Image 1: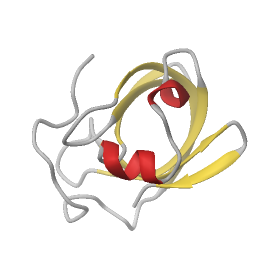
Image 2: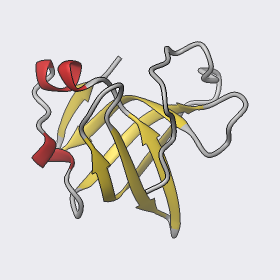
Image 3: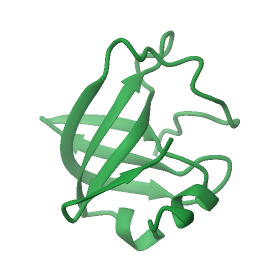
Image 4: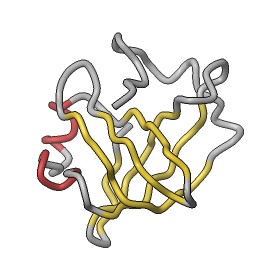
Length: 102
């Protein structure tokens, strides 16, 4: 899996004027610091997404199993301003439940 980032970062580098929503199947996931990540297949394309730190994910009720390979989810997020291969997710919908990540 191509990692979207290698260091923790805030929301400053993301273009909040260009939000998107996408539904697809999770191909791979990482539930570790500094941020959890998923790679998703949607509309015939591979999408790498930055979620939130593991502690925030757990506090919101999201476990590693919920973002495991093969699961389907919907994400709402923002593209990175200078790296088109990266996006940050504000919320994720898993099993018809919305989880805020910001």
